[in-house]
Length: 145
Image: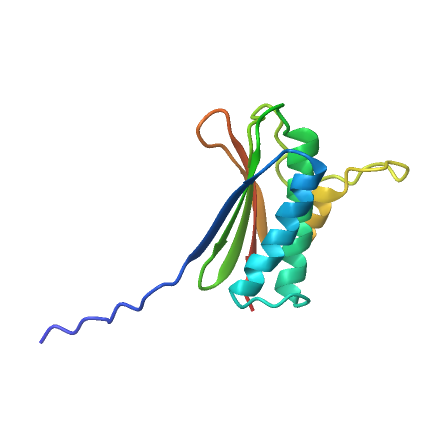
């Protein structure tokens, strides 16, 4: 008798949206991400939603500040799997990649440069990826409780 393991369905939820590469677009990306997580049952004010909100805010701000190409948008992607949430922000500035590995803290008197430190501290994993040129993606994953 051949015993087969039943295949359990895997639920994956995906959200993708383009935003203008402006501070307003970055803010809207953060707000819509929090809303979408709530729709998926990840409540605002919970640990996962709060970490995701900061990560989206930082990655979207970096796309606007460092990845902006005039006339081109950036894209926010959220992928909710069974065990993790993946956040990906894609822009069209391939030559402007964040450093790999653990980000170095900026000088104490610097006004910026702490965004990737926050991402690295909050995310379970993070990194960069390519894609079809001209595209660069910075992603972060959060393991779900």
